[in-house]
Image 1 (spheres, rainbow, N blue to C red):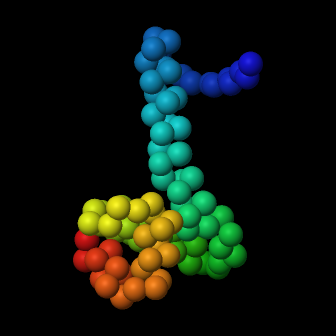
Image 2 (cartoon, one colour):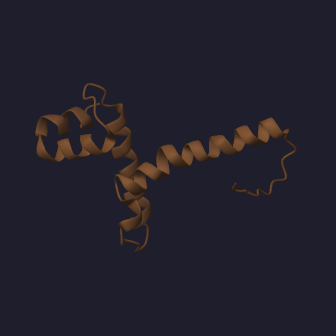
Length: 96
């Protein structure tokens, strides 16, 4: 069994607190994990000035466009690969 400890000033019931924690991890798993694994955000060595923030914005836009494109039934990773091999797929994603 694993234990997790949280510190909060919020006055919540156990159910409300559990829901809040699950919502936080839902964001972590849905967004940050995809950025780390699929787009390899953590491997980017660029950190000068605002470059890291600017690239993060571009990555978010790219991820949102890939997810918006609904005509291709594929994962984010697969759509990304398909877009590198086909201008038609890239156009679908850009214009989603």
